[in-house]
Image (cartoon, rainbow, N blue to C red; front, side):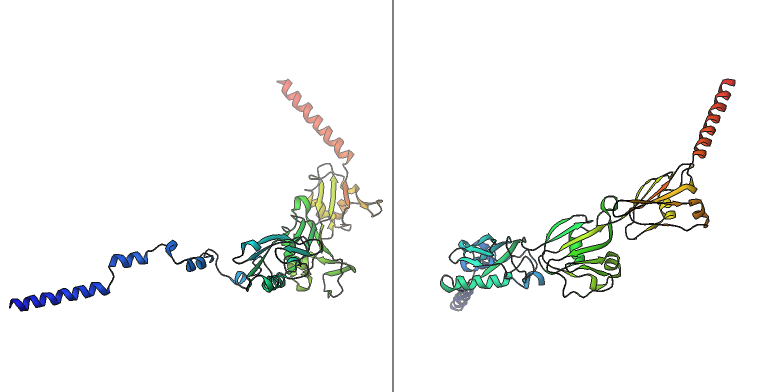
Length: 360
C-alpha cells in the first residue's frame, strides 16, 4: 500500500514539472507584452518612427506624396522656394530657390533645370540623376515652400489688395475670395464691374452675356451677373500674371438745404433719381427752396453743365424725376424769404418770452 502511495506521489510530481517546463511563468508573459517600444528590435523601431499617426489620410494628402503642398501639376518658375528631401539621406535634404535662369544647384549632381517642370517631373528627374551613380532607388519628396513665380495682382475695391500666388487652377471668384472680398461701403465700395488684364490676350475666350471685350488684352465682367446669376461663362479661369481690378463704386453728391448732405455710393446701380437722392440725404430742411434746385454735371474734360430742377413740381408729379449719373451734384439752396421769416419768428418769440418774464 505504501509502495502504491509513493508511486502516485512520484507521478503527480513529474506531471507538475512537465507543465511548468512547457509553460513560461505568468509574470514573464506579462513583462513580454508590456515591453517598452524602446526595447523593440532596431529594424522595427526605425520603420515605425517614420509613420505620422497624427495626420489623417485624406485623398488630398495620399494622392501624391511628391507634392504635399498642393497641385502636382504646379509648374515651377523663378523665385519659387522648394524643399527637397531624400529619404534616409539627410546630406541631400535641402531648401533651394529657383534662380532667375530657372535652375537649382544640388549636391552631387550640380545645376538642374527646374523652371518649366511640374513638381512631379522635377521629382522624377532628381531621382533619376541621383540614381545613376550615387543612390539605389532614391525616394525623393518635393514641397513647394513659397510660391513666387506666378503671382496674380488683385487691386481696386477689395478688402486686401496685393499679389497672390497662383498655386493651381483658380477661377475669378476664387481669386476675389483670396483678396478678402469687396471693400467696405464706408471706405472703398465695389462698383458694378471687374476688369481682367492679360498680357497674352484672350484669343480663345468665348464671350458670353455680361462680358465686354475692352481690347485684345482686357475684358470687363458684370459683377452682378457673376455673383448672383452664377453664369459659368463669366467665372473665367485666371492665368499667371493676370491683373484683376475691381472698379470702385460711383458717387452722387447732395448738398445745401438737406438734413444729411454728402456723397452717396451708387454701388450696383448706374444712377439715382433726384427724389432717391433727396431721400438718402434725409429730406429737406425747413428753409429749402424746392423750386430753385439745380444739378451740376461734370464732364470728362472737367467742364460743368448746370441744369435747373423744380423739386416742388417733381414731388407733385408735374415734372420729370430727373436722373443723376456718376459724380453729378444736386444742390438745394436755402430760401431767403423762409430764412427771414424764421429769423422774424425767432425774434418775436424771444421778445414775447422776455416781456412775459419781466412783466412778472
